Structures are given as structure tokens and as C-alpha cells.
Image 1 (cartoon, rainbow, N blue to C red):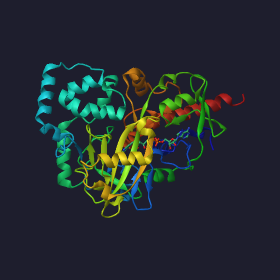
Image 2 (cartoon, rainbow, N blue to C red):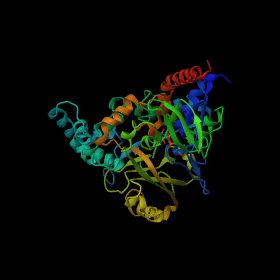
Image 3 (tube, rainbow, N blue to C red):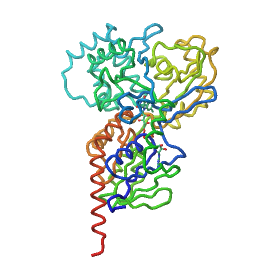
Length: 453
Ligand SMILES: Cc1cc2nc3c(=O)[nH]c(=O)nc-3n(C[C@H](O)[C@H](O)[C@H](O)COP(=O)(O)OP(=O)(O)OC[C@H]3O[C@@H](n4cnc5c(N)ncnc54)[C@H](O)[C@@H]3O)c2cc1C
């Protein structure tokens, strides 16, 4: 082995860590992936239960483009449909976002707002949503949803959260039309790093979303080291010099972390540069999967519920992926915004399932007769919260990274950004060549300096 192959330390065996190691290998740099838990995949895990229902913990929706880039397209099925609606009333479910244009009061107030308010930078989410969408749509739909999945009032949130939403209405209409014609779930809004197009559509890997992690892990030169938590990252104040993993000291000049950025800052020694990220907050989710008899119980795959329900969204993923539930049965996922320790988080499984059953009746008739069982998952890292309070630090993380040479924080939680798996992939594809070069140079310089003269 030459001096130039000292492995990069990759922290986390979720999709981001695995993709980072995969991309480093493409650039001739060895990496070891350390996962704290007993298995890989993190938030991209898939479970199949004894009744034959298959659940993806976080992600459900990936594209043919992403899967082709990983060499997995042949092992995926194409989704026949995908759609999102907003529940405005018992029989009113306009398609998101196009159908909302059919609601006269939304259109009137959006036009009024555009005329009345000059286009200028608005830093507060509530102001920006009202200006961009109109007061009626903002107050009745957008802001209640934003507050449910952020856990903060919209006037305490940064307007930069809006940049995370798909914006071009004309393109959305075009893509919806393509969906109808091609009878494929053309991707709208699931990736921002690469453009949407009529030829980019949703697919689903055989074996579930976790199969993506399995495939990437199998292609790595070194197996992922599970039950190996990163405990410390050592710096000399300016740059990374090593790490402690599961009690073992490791020399390295490069660490790629997929940990939540607020957690990463607690691991770093020798500098206080990351301390400002400690107060960043994530919004948790309680995910309740109801197993029911019947199919097509919801009007669309995703129904947003800005009002009248304790959960902000319900999903019938089997409308898009019929194979994840046994014939004649379905699953309805109810998503509650929650914070570890709060009232919703602390409800027992029985109590939160009962909350779903007792409130979902207006959307699903006879839900109790249909009920077969349910599973409950508490996910503390649902969404990064873009609080106004720390917006300058969030923006600096996005543009300047950690500020410590050799320490790279990547992925949805590491970058503290509303990105999905494909975004993570393309971002890594762009970032890794520079990281690989920097690593090879640092390793080489280190060996030159430490060589006896
Ligand atoms: C409700 C929901 C729905 C979503 N839907 C979609 C979707 O449809 N499509 C899509 O593309 N994306 C979706 N996503 C996003 C996607 O699931 C995540 O972006 C992705 O799984 C995050 O991967 P990651 O590797 O960045 O983080 P994680 O999956 O969290 O991986 C981090 C890993 O690090 C490990 N770890 C923690 N501490 C340590 C330590 N000290 N040392 C070593 N390892 C450690 C953890 O155990 C974990 O395995 C969704 C997310 C949520 C929450």
C-alpha cells in the first residue's frame, strides 16, 4: 500500500455515508464507514412484517435517474402514479399545487398581494409566504403545514425555507400532463440538484428502499463496521488529525460526517468553531402506519391536512406501489409533528393509534371495521428547523461548511438542509472529487513531513 491511501473516516452507515464512501472509491480514495447501530441504512430502512406489509421508515420515493446512476435501474419497478392533494373540506381535495389555482379566493388574494407588496427580500417565513402565495392560501394552507412540520410559529422561521419548495407552476403543469400521458409517476419536487423532466420518474427497488443501501454497501472494498460509534474527532485547531471510534484511536486527515450537525459539534475536540451549530433544532415525527382492509381509501397518494386533523399529512403509499401491501389491503401513514418528550411524542402506541382511528373517519369511512393493526415509529430527526434565530449560522454552514480543514458534514442532517436522497447523491458527486484531492494531498504532505531526514 502506498503512503497515499490512508483511509478517510466516514461516520454513519445511512445512505449519505455509504454514497460518500462509494464516490471516494470512484476517485481512488479508500474509506472506512463506521455505523453506531447494529445495521446499516439509518433513515432509509425497510421492514416487512409478519402480515406481508412492507414499510420504509423515511423515504419512499426515488427516481429512475438516481437508480440508474447507482446501477440499480434493472432491479426497480416503475410507479404507475403519484399525486398530492390538499384537503380543504369533506369533498374538496384540489391537487397540489395546480388545483389550488381553481380556488377563487386563493387566486384573488395572491394577485392582490403581488400588486400591493413590492418585491423585496423578506426574512420572515410568514411574510414571504403571504407575499408569494397570497394571504388566503398562506394562512389557510401553507403556514399551518409549515408550522406543523417545524414546531415553531411562522414568524419565528426564516423565509429561506420557501426556497426548498418547488416553484415553477408552468413546469409542474407540464410534468403533470406528462404523467397522465405516459402513465408513469413523473417526478415533481423530489430533487432540486438536477432538473425535473418528463423522462425522470419514480421507481421502487425490489426489496424496498433499504436495498439501495445494501447495494451500495456491497460495492465497497471494506465492509461497513457496525456497532462502531464515533466518539471523538480530534483537530489541531485548524484541521482534522484523527478520530476515536468505539474506543479505538484512528489517525486520519479527513472525516466525512453524516451526523446531525448539532451532534457533530459535540464530538469535535481542539476547536470551538462548531459550537454555533449546537442550538440547531430538528423537528421530530411520530409515524403511525395503519394496516387496513381495502384499497384506494384516500383520494391521492398524499393528502395534506392543514386543518382539522392532529397529523399534517396522510399517505397511502400502496396507491403508488401496490406491491407493498397484500392484495385487498392497504396502509395509511399518519404523520404527526412532535418533539422528543412532548405530549404527542410521549403518548403510548395504543393512545396514538386510537387518536388516528378516532379522527380519520371523515377521510376513511368504516376505519374501525377495516383496522387490522398498526405500527408506530418515533423519528427524532424528521426535519431541520430553519429558525430565524440561527439563520446566519445556517447560511454560513451552507456556503462555507464546517470551517475545519478535513472535516466535511454531509447529507440531510449533516448539511442541515431539506434535501432528499437523490440531492445528497448529486451533491456528493460534486463535492467528493475536491475532498478526495485534498485528502490525498494531506496524506502525502503528512508522510513527507514525518519521513526521517
Ligand atoms: C418522513 C420522511 C420521509 C422521507 N421521504 C423521502 C423520500 O420519499 N425520498 C427521499 O429521497 N428521501 C426521503 N426522506 C429523506 C431520507 O430518508 C433521508 O435524507 C436519508 O435517509 C438520510 O440519510 P443520512 O445517511 O443522511 O442519515 P441517516 O439515515 O440518519 O444515517 C446516519 C447514520 O449515522 C448513524 N450514527 C449516528 N450516530 C453515530 C455515531 N456517533 N457514529 C457512527 N454512526 C452514527 C445512525 O445510526 C445512522 O445509521 C424522508 C425523510 C423522512 C424523515
